[in-house]
Length: 136
Image (tube, rainbow, N blue to C red; front, side):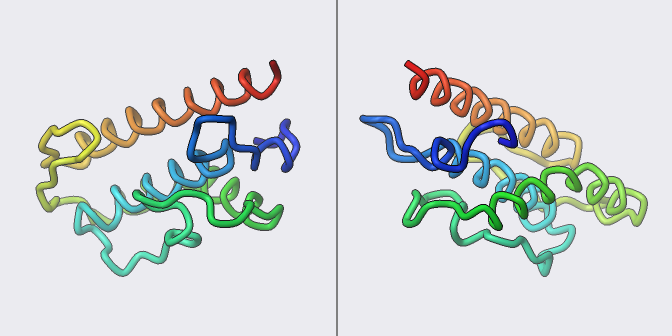
């Protein structure tokens, strides 16, 4: 994200519905949402930019430099936020959830983290593919 111009991050390749910036924002927002809200660990957890990048959205306006910087910070602090919640035993009980993406029931934090990793991998690959398409 840091190595690509904001203009390119916001470009939507022909035939697609979203951009590299949206995919990045979506994977960040989804990770926090799945781990903290969906599990029931912290339903009041505030996720910046959630409404712009949540499931079912698409870019309604370009991602700004400020938003990109906030998303990068959220990405950089995700692991520590999860570790802190684990240390506080917030995941002792997880609300069972079946993801739309994979259709697999999730009943533990380990399963949810694996789900988030798989989801992130899919969107990371989309970002890589878009970058290749836009460079052509």
